[in-house]
Amino acid sequence: METESEPYVRLATLRQLHRVVADLNTARSLADTLQTVVDGIVVGLGYELACVNLVRPDGDLVVAAFAGDPAAEALITGRVGSRASWERRLTMGECWDGLRFIPHTEGWVLLEDDVPQWHTDGPDPRFEDEWHPEDRLYAPMYASGGELLGVISVDRPRNGRRPGAWGREALQMYAFQAAIAISNARLRANMQRALVRLEREQQALRASEESFRQAFEYAPSGMAIAEMGGDQHGRLLRTNDALCRLLGRPASVLRRYSFSDLVHPEDIGTLLRTSAEGGRAELRLGRRDGTYVWVSLRNSVVADAADGPRFLLTHVEDIEERKRHELQLAHRASHDSLTGLPNSAELRARLGARLCRRPQSARASAIEALDAAFEGRDAHGGQAGQTGQVGQTGQVGHDGYEVRAEAGGAGEHGFQPDGPDRYGGSDPFDFPGAPTAPTDGPYDHHVHTVAPATDVDDGTKGLAVLFCDLDGFKSINDRFGHHTGDAVLIEVARRLTTGVRDGDTVARLGGDEFVVLADGLGAADAADLAVRLRNAIIPPIRVDGRAVRVGASFGIGWASCGMSADEVLRSADQRMYIEKRSRSKAHRRAG
Image (cartoon, rainbow, N blue to C red; front, side, top):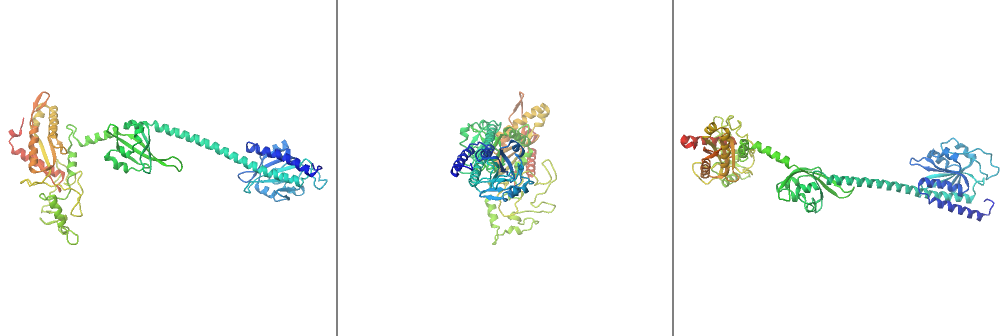
């Protein structure tokens, strides 16, 4: 071509350049693009050898494609040259615009570096622009941001001459197009990898969602997803079949509710105190038929996406059977196994819950107690009673209440502590449910229990304790056996329970002894109640076709703050024995 006219050379080169550049854009992968680059140089630009040295992520350059000589291709393809050696080469020799030419007279110093190379010996050039086998011509390729993508290396021009001005420009233009093609190929490769990765992630997500859906839908216990935050906080969005069966409601109906709509009114506080993240609670949820079922709730927070809305995932486990067993155990621990009445421990707990350690005047009404409390304040807001000294009979003590401390070891409230007896321990105030004595202020939230006067009915109402002992029961038990005796106790318990008001307590203290707690009664009311209960017990009791009769002796005691539960029971017991001894045996024995 060098012998042709300049316009013809340019036109023929442009046609070749156009064809090989068009081929660059048809390659499907990065490897195909690199091979097309070197093939285009050999086919269209008139060089016998060409290779592409591609920059790796670590900065070194690897021989990624080679064309022109299979032996050379097998020898150097895949070999790596350091970035420092390549930067040295790109600063040596002659700069032909964007190209770098290193003549054989300078290139001998590069024979021992680590850049992969293929060369042959040859004679010295016969004329000035003749190509020598050790001449080197490089065309660096840069990305749009100026980053080095790689270097094209060419050798052995077919005309045996160094390229002229137009040949250099054509190689430079080709290197520019090759850089674009390689960048596009890399972009396509990255996009393809991203698409593959995205598809895998989507498949994994779909598999995870399907696994969650199956685990949610087919879980043996209830599951629910509810909204978090906003006006619809707590509204059920999704429920599984197990929860629908548990509550007897279809999923379409449950989506109208939140757990706060379904929870038992007594458990709403428990639900509100349950935290969203990791919260646990045991409460009752309402069924469609109006009944309630005990469940265990366990909460966790899940997000719809990385920055998506959060939802409340609640696991609902049916614990009705366990709660029933717990209640049965608690009932057995606090109730008599024969009659089903509260036992001695439960009786003391209920009685102790009404008592505190502070004595209350037997005749002071609630209004009088308040008046006395406020009148006890001095001009500076203090209390006159707080400076009183305990230890002299009749002096005013703490909070303005009258206290007694007599010689002989009486306690600070005037009650003589006793040793252990059949009612409990030695500490008169060591009983279940006894509130701690208030120590500040003349008034507290505890409603003090007041004992009415026994000699005259002044209208004061109190907590009556009726101690009942059956008369003639031992002879029935000895004569007819324990089976008959048990049947008698069961019937007596039923008659006592029938004869009292709702809210009153009938307890079996042990053996043939029963205790009735009746609040809000005066002295006359308690006496009338004892008569009614005695009359209810006297009628014959039929057991196995045989009629037997028992009588009953009642002693009426009164609970009052400052007393212990055992003291109250002992007082009623003593009055019962007084009442029993006051009647003849014939009158006591009803049958």
